[in-house]
Length: 153
Image (cartoon, rainbow, N blue to C red; front, top):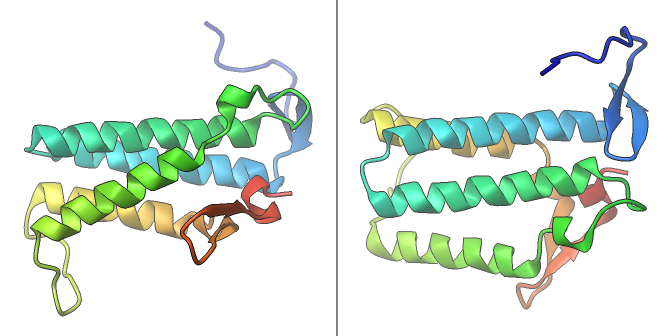
């Protein structure tokens, strides 16, 4: 397997269906999402609960789905590579289930009480810092609306 294209660096790279500048916002988004899923993987590796591990695997797979959606051009993207509203609803339900079982802190959290907790917090911050999430907007009924920012064009 070859790990390079051999084309040299003219400041461009391939997406699925077109060649774009490395400064294209989709490239930055893909990098941020890759970093976020890597951080989630670290949290999953340290997780002690099978339920937590499975939820994190599902979240990672959903992030890969988002990455595929971003990487394809509109013309070539198969319908199967579009993250559905059901996945957003799953994430909301999973979040609600977790928060129903724990008492939320009333003050700022200082990460580091445990390796699994610090790793999970790190994954949350990696995604929050990615700048990808603001492209998602929600209606008052909780249904996802995809803004132009979601496609980063």
